[in-house]
Length: 467
Ligand code: PMP
Image (cartoon, rainbow, N blue to C red):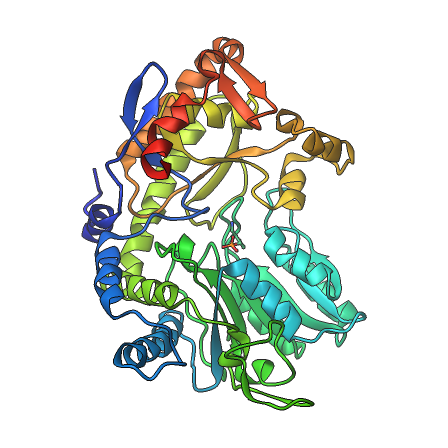
């Protein structure tokens, strides 16, 4: 089942809910195959146990004098160090701010940089909305081009720097795309950026979970100045995210959110702000989120990120080869990539494919535009049109172009990939039959088997937890 990969095998063993069966059509159930790791990864049993144990000592932090509060405060503070170390951050010169997720991290940075309306932020045409919209609302954005396969055009990077520096205040780029999985050479981009006296921010949401990542020393021209990533995409779904950057960025001016924990001294007419990271961690912090993420990263370190990445690479190559063997299938993007693969099956709507795989094959994945609408339209060769807005407003998602996305993690197996491939082939061979058997439901915002238009399917499990 595994290609001799003990690290991946151990990871699979420790995944919570790995053997869960899900209901499928015909009153049957199937072992769940989860290929939506780019959205959120499942948690790890040993970490859940550690969190459960620690909860006996859990307390509010930084404010109490009791023993539990002292212990919890130290744990919370030290988690910053552990998380920073995982990505090679130097917290003697950098600050690590704990937030909710990558979206909050990038928004926080967009606020923190105190950009002026004439400042330019370079982003790429392959970004997730979370690394596009925060910049668009605070500065002028110029897009670095991508080619027809969605790969960054390095000439365009140079061209934009030459044309716009010193107006360019930041280069903001994803480490890996959440659509094609394509991995950008962010250290080379850092070098180009630094040559123009500009800093770089890497959206690590899809890179940090898949490969060992190192921000490198400040003295190195390849150094990554800012890094954002999410805990829930790296087996720590406890509401924590990370923003790392030079301490001076977080030293000046008031924080975006103001209140408890962000100050040293408050007078009626003056406020003296706390030092970072406290200044940017307003209110009672997410101690369990910090602890869950720090312990998960330690676990991954011990298991060996390089071994896990190698297994994922092999599994991705295996999957791509199998997909390409299928007729009538278009895969988007190109190498190098993490285990994120988007495709379309000829003349079958992406959401229909997703629905069949859900209701009949017990496979979880994602379909649509994956919060990267400009990139997906580019790859599909579809033009912007306000007609799509009308479709969204009427919940006619069956009229919106998109793709099917599978996102692998190292705990996935060849047997699971084979299961998917078998079903894709079956769907293509029986497409006319499936088109008859499934109807789009605006109420549900998706395709549903015509003989299953009742809520029992979900309620079977839902009621167990929500009664
Ligand atoms: N950037 C990328 C590349 C992503 O894939 C995602 C999540 N799909 C985000 C940012 C946003 O992450 P979050 O939802 O955790 O804020």
